[in-house]
Amino acid sequence: MRGGDDGRAERQPEPGLSAVRTFVVELDMSRTAIADITDEAARFVRGAGDGLLSVFAPHATAGLALIETGAGSEADLLEALGRLLPRDARYRHQHGSPGHGVDHLLPALLPPSLTVPVAGGRMLLGTWQRLVLVSLNRDNPGRQVRLSFLAG
Image (cartoon, rainbow, N blue to C red; front, side):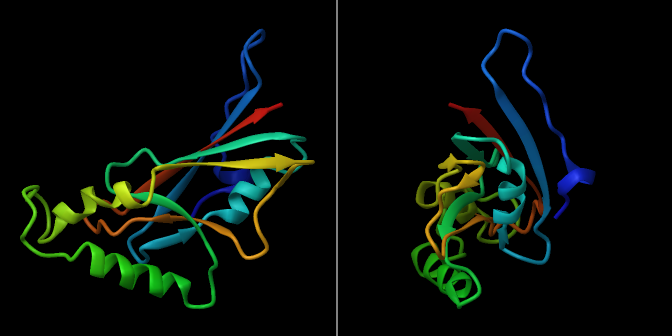
């Protein structure tokens, strides 16, 4: 994952427009199906005051989730998705690697966008909640997540 000061692609608002700041997190998902981006998001909103953090994955085969990580939930999530969306030839969408059609159904279960409230420059997540990108699509390992902060 690239981020922090060396990976920021931040855009400042033009004068007279609403104060929306944007940062794009670049991810390499070639070795994982779940990438925790909570720390990147926390750095992005640090010191920003109160507002809303919009998190958006501009991909037809990836989704976002708020889950507990590090206690087996990642494996449980992947196992549950495997039961709900088996990788086989039953899907009409057939291009790409075998079972790729299922990748296009993932965003129907895990949405491509989330909104997180922010107060005092801190995301108001629950104690164990972590923000993750889920991508089962091995054909496209390069992923982006767009973080946008709207002050208010």
